[in-house]
Image 1 (cartoon, rainbow, N blue to C red):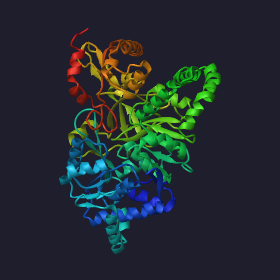
Image 2 (image 1 turned 120 degrees about the horizontal axis):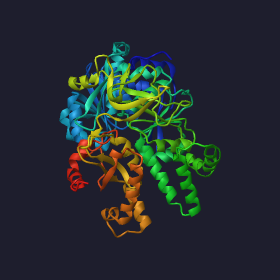
Image 3 (image 1 turned 180 degrees about the vertical axis):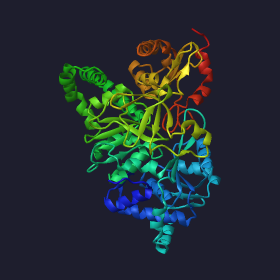
Image 4 (image 1 turned 45 degrees about the vertical axis):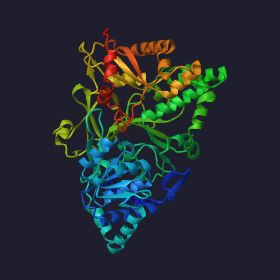
Length: 587
């Protein structure tokens, strides 16, 4: 496959090489609905012309506030083919972020789909010149219906049939194609400018080291997420049929019925799946079967390697437990890529040992997908070697520097922030700390800026410790604190499903959630657990105190980024009184 440099070349390649009656598939009202390659291309041309008929000019910004679907792709491709710039927005975006992003990007038009998303638009309709519904907008005044813009586009297409080729030829590899807003742990989001080449570079590379024929890709991450969008574009170009699922409560059933072979996940989803499987095992009535299952779970996470474990115990565990787990999750998996955050090593081992092909990767919005483990070359604890054309090296304080054609053009209307991360030689300073082994495989060891200093002068990297804390069944998420303090402590956000199981196990139906968490049983259990964590970290990182937090952090309340990372400054501000109480009696 020859290199592709623009979205126009991608569209032409699809038209010349692919034909599939089920190229794009979406789950709606309990069943799969399909869109063929030919229909997709026909609608794409009509929608592109339709945007031009509505006055879209070259360089105009157009937002997409919609769930992942074939129509999301049509909107994205059409915006870019018309010479515009696509601005994807997360469907659960907080109102403050929505206002900031669409205003900062000078967004003229907006595509909308979904009840909550239409409500968001109505609150801020004055920010847009035109809104287009990817579903029925109902009685919303001024909203243009999808079939109406397609009809208008078809009229212009008939009047100017040669315009399509002109549009394709106008696109250049260095043209701005999209602005993706990335929300860090502090401050307002920054608009990452990605060019056509940034998006297209990896299409011609064999990043998975397998053949795409006869594959099925189950898409469950929002296409506003750069990792999901990049893989989505690659697989569309390769002709792999894509199945979009937005309701994750249907994931297990869909996996069993559809038998997909490829999926992209974030660690949080794998953690939730593990918790659900573990809870189901702990609920087995038979003591013998429960004991065997818990033993098999522990064996899967065990880092130890020996002839007995590999050739005797694990085959027994596979026969009794693991094969049943695989059956419940589909049995045709070839690649499950995990990225977006660090994956706990024990959890990675668990999935690999039960027979699910988890391959961890790494990248960031500013540099797209950069490194990936792949079949035949995988090492747990690393994110694999750099992808073709991607350059990786370590800078000062072991900060990972990224170079090559996937690195962003800069931050939109933010030259100061751009200068802070892009040096004169074009290296992107990622803010991640890493190590590179003898085979060129990268390991992520923390964030440079997440480090904080205790009053004793020692530095602490919280993310590694938080991964350990998050393994406790009563902990959904955790945050290590202690900057400029004598010792480290942690805020533990309660896993309400785990709390419900504890209440059932203890039979304490009369006490409140807070009383149950403050009980002697829970206190002793947490002391033992924290002691086990403290044995695995440096002595100055020792966690001395903890506090359970009942309210779950969320994207909507500004405590999580859209990629489910902690917004630490917001959390510290909200729970300032709790933090002060923890340190009110210094030890």
